[in-house]
Amino acid sequence: MLNSSRDITANLKTLTFECGLSDNENQLLFLRGRSAGLVICGCAHALFICRLAISLRIFIKAEDTDQTPDTERTLKTQGLRVGILGGGHIGKQLTHLLLEMSGLKPSSINVSTRRPENLEEFSGKGVECYYDNRRLATWADVLFLCCLPSHLPQVCTEIHSHIPPHSLIYSFPSAVPINRLARLLGHNFILKPQYDFVACESTDIWLSESCVTKALKDTSIIVASCPLSLKGGVSLDQMWVPSVLYSLLNMCTAQKIGSSQALQLLNELFKCQPSAKTFICQNFVNSAVAAMLTSDKIFPWINLVDVQSKETPLSRCLLESEALQNLISAAYCLIFSDLPSRKTV
Image 1 (cartoon, one colour):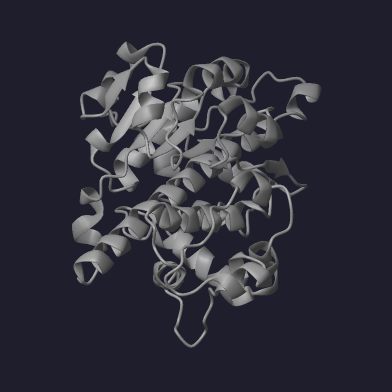
Image 2: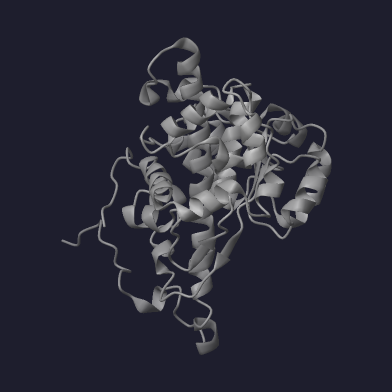
């Protein structure tokens, strides 16, 4: 008897995507891998900043209540509000990923899209889906812009003056430079990853799964997407990781946390050994500013637009410290370590 679960189309080359392509079209197949790589890396890096922000809140609350942080127990109780503006391919993939891997409650995720009725898979789980960009911008602590580049100017016009000063805006790759984006939004607390492509033997690693959430259960893809050592033909601007660290510092500043405690929190967040003194004032600000910072004085607010466009004390520190690079890479891989059914290399 024929096994009904068997895929009778398996290994039939006439049914593959590549079948029937001309020689010229075959030369463009690498673009599929690049496109998939951008989506996977973009969503994975967005998850990374969310998990760091959540963990930082846990540590801050533990300091305030003099308790030992229990990440597993309190991950869903810290109230980080995450907004996703755009319900297209990237917006949906990111929502899936955050629901499964961020530890956020569904009610802590809102999506604004022109067709909220098409997102029943999320609204049925408790995610609020609606079409009101201003409402989303006012509500979110972290707002992901996942709209089309052609829609971005209109979106910025809508939400301008509705963004709380300490809300982090995270813009997925678009043709709009960060300086112009800051002017359009009237806001400088913005993270905008700048991806590029480099020559490599193959981009096929990104094509193993069409779903980002499933792809990031594969150890080889987790390693390939690590921000400091991207593989598979994708590269990330070296200013992105320092900017992530500056964004965490700003979150401490927004809570009026003194410089000494802020550094302690960041060292705990990345599991730095006390003897290493990985993060000190001079890593983040110049010597003149560091000299004026007493332990209880807060760090100045850092303009993320500036630190993504020029060298900073932190970008130099990261470039020169392999130990710090390893700690950040380990923290990145750790956010995926507790996932079930992970493949191994």
